[in-house]
Amino acid sequence: MSSGTDTFIRVVEVWEPDADGSLLVLGGGHYGSAPRFGALSGQMCFGRGEGLPGQAWEAGHPIVLQKFAGSVFRRTQAAHAEGLTCGIALPVFDAERLKAVVLIFCGSGQALAGAIELWHNDPAESPDMTLRDGHYGSTAEVFEFISRRTAFRKGTGLPGLAWESGLPVFMQDLGKGGRFLRADSAQKVGINRGFAIPCSTADGQHWVMAFLSALATPIVRRFETWLPDPAGSYLLRREGFCEQAGALDGGRFEDRVMSGQGALGQALASGVPRIGALAGEPGAGVAGLRSVLALPVLQGGRVVAVVAWYL
Image (cartoon, rainbow, N blue to C red; front, side):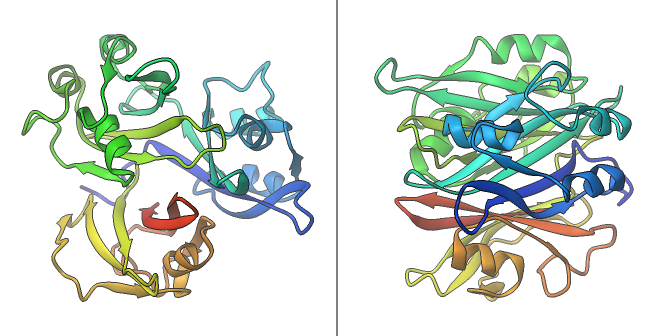
């Protein structure tokens, strides 16, 4: 696949609490073809409950914002000017303490097939995980219709597997093996790969973000899952996929990143998402990649995985 292929995710930001924990300030961003949006973002801050990052902080769980106009979003005009139409806020918590909020922005377009889904389970109400919300781009309405009427038990389907394991789950070919319960409808709209990430939240409930890539518009250009050693001193790559290189060999255990080294190592050391340039990162040699988001997965206050998205 060409390095110029559009990705489903266009902009990513990391908002972090300031020194006294009262405001969220911009900790880093990838803006690609939306530099004016980035210039505005660097001038802003958000209190608890303010704007999209503040809303996720207050709610204690991820939020999908399908449209900006008439919502809590404070950069609507700038977002629309850059072709951004949807925002997703993914907070990272250590128990009830907020570490950061990752904002993910998607655009519109006839060819932007794929989906980002937010799955939810309240154990007090049901043993099932159901769709809370999602952004489906130009994906056929039938896939969204089926998704909104699908429920997963723990260990079943892509969201249920991430829920059960507490770790990121990747499916390279959703049509093989029977683990993806919506395979038929996904294949009809060109969705071929998926990965799911369990979310650390402050509300005591279970949340999973699922990212479904289409052939023409992958979610990101490359992604990897890294797991720490028992002492948390380094990361080993478990698996990954690159739109240019294909599947990445998870058995190459010499591929390691030390704690504190680059964006991935900093995410392991701090439990805070990091966006960095590619110098020194594992995907640095792949043409067309510009930056990496290192997203830690926390469980019981400990980093149990780091997901790397290359953009």
